[in-house]
Length: 449
Image 1 (cartoon, rainbow, N blue to C red):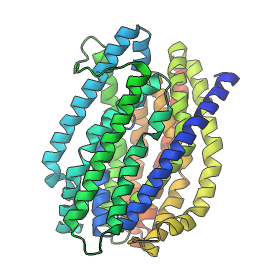
Image 2: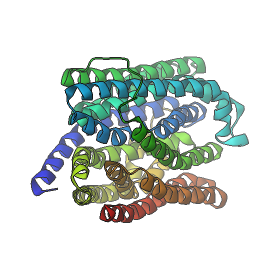
Image 3: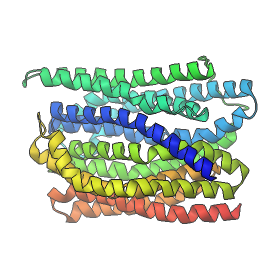
């Protein structure tokens, strides 16, 4: 990556960061509003569980890293002409839609079996009942976010970054409106009304996000919806191998999340709502400080890897250096200010001062692990640019195993008041190991080619 291309990435990253900051700001308001409307009690924790469960499944099904998988394939398709690229785009969108809808149907049918497994006998029957009722609305969003990830990959392949960065605003604003409605309702409002308002807003917001991305793709590239649910003759075998390894990668990564969620539901102090609120703010910091750099570097990494592994290695180094320059000071400042910030923004409505302080404690420790987490995410994109999904899967296995062992130790040996902080620390240590091993593995991989 030359000096000019480095400046291009930096400029592009700054623009994406500005768009992302706008979107994440509404996400922050959404989180605070929902916390105030629901509190960190039975309903709040049940809604957090209902959100986290489809989030886990969505990540396992490649939604979160779909762009990293599809970018090399879309780049290759575009080199074969507009007609081939258009057909490939239509097929990718059709197949992803069909696949995610099928998963939603299966998960909806098994909700009564899946929800009680999270937390075991320590979770009350009422909490499980509420989580299942809310999951009826949240689980279908798996399909919406899966299709959104595919549309985002298509837009990124054309170097369109702004709209994908602000698209979540549609979802955030819808949920802010729902939280406002709930805050204005009397304290004795029935749980059924709360579920209906939250559920409807969750579905509407996800649908609006997909619609915005589709209209942008149509305006930018001239794409028209065409149902072609088959990839026969379009490199299905190579795609299947990559998908198989990346499914394994994300399943291994999410195993730690499943364990964490179960332990949080069984905890007598730090429930899913507190941890989830801290996680959302942590991901907002990641989305503003690191994700724009990864997103803007991805198309260049793909093109560089197509030329030579050495160029891909140089591009990875430049992007990693830029991530560290931005995230390390930001995370240190954020960790110092985490508790005052959460006390200021969360201590209202049904979210108590104690809940806000606990949220800040979890957030402070999580921010200290922001840099290794960002580097580990960059490494996945870098490996996939070399069409190598096997190596990052092996690397992730080591970090995830360490995280799970530490989580179990936290729950067994620490006082309940320290559970949330211990669990997020386990996540951070796992990411640190993943980043260190991944860096060595990627450099070695580039030398072999």
